[in-house]
Image 1 (cartoon, one colour):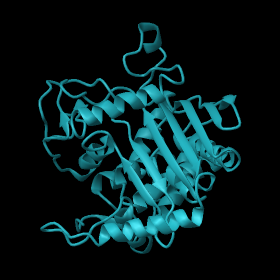
Image 2 (cartoon, helix red, strand yellow):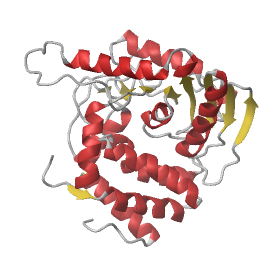
Image 3 (cartoon, rainbow, N blue to C red):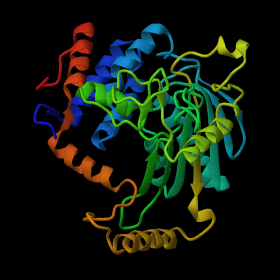
Amino acid sequence: MDDTYVRIPSSELKQFTIEVLSAAGIPRDDAETEADVLIWANLRGIDSHGILRIPLYLRWIDSGVMKPTPNIQIVNETPATLMVDADQALGPVVTTMAMKKIIDKAKNTGIGWAVIRNITHQGAMAYYSLMAAEHGMAGIASVCGIANMAPFGASAPGVTNSPLAIAVPGGKNRPISLDMATSVAAGGKLDLAKDKGISIPSDWALDINGQPTTDPHLWNALMPFGGAKGSGLALMFECLSSIMVGMPLLHPTESEKDKIKLGMQNSFIGAINISTFTDLNGYLENIDRLIAGLKDLPKSNGTDEIFVPGEIENRVYDDRSVNGVPLPPGTVTSLRDASERFDLTLPKGL
């Protein structure tokens, strides 16, 4: 970790985030939900989806893209499904509500599935899939926005680098939690590179001319992981989210374009009640056995330990919960700007 970074207790960062969002007009309860998701990401080392996002959210609130007091509506509901119109609400506010509802549905029907229309940035998607895992269920979450990634073979944006999060509960172990973008690197990692003042690998993004760039300020299109596999997944996630809710964000018609604003997203989330299909305790034992078996495999050259998805983030969480969240200079500057704008006291050390 860079010695120039300052470490701030997560509790102080969360309280400051709540105060900033409240000052921006967001109801206190919603500000607390948003802050919880942002700081959770920082604690797990997903800094690209943490409080680095505060300046962007404030710009979106100022411009009307993100509504502090939206008219959230349940458009359609069945015993197993839910469709919500978020009315450009803060992503975590609607997504946590929807996930709680489909977890309850899964308890009764075996599965709960929700599609969310017209939402704004939801943060780290693993937060929601893990909500299901905490109830002894498998969780899944994904989101699609406007084009920001070049499909395989293209040199300009045509799909979204839609993230996918899947989590299952563990027995003696913590849940297995996969959270990945369909791009080589999540867009937030390029924002983090800006805050750190560092370059990016040449296979992360293309510039306006369709050429690879190492400057995070010059990117125009992210690159898909695995070539056609990554962009193919992103395309299908559009089919399961934006097109499913009647609000296509990729290649919309001219009339639809007028309704789309930067920052709008559509999403789907699911919860699967494991006990509907098999004995839960037996499932958890098999997950533990699976993890142990993977870790006992022969290691490749240069590998000290084999990790399962989410394990590294758990270790970062344990460290940062005790030693504080490290903040790069660019993020510190953004927090100071927010403090000055709303006349708020910064956490000590900033």
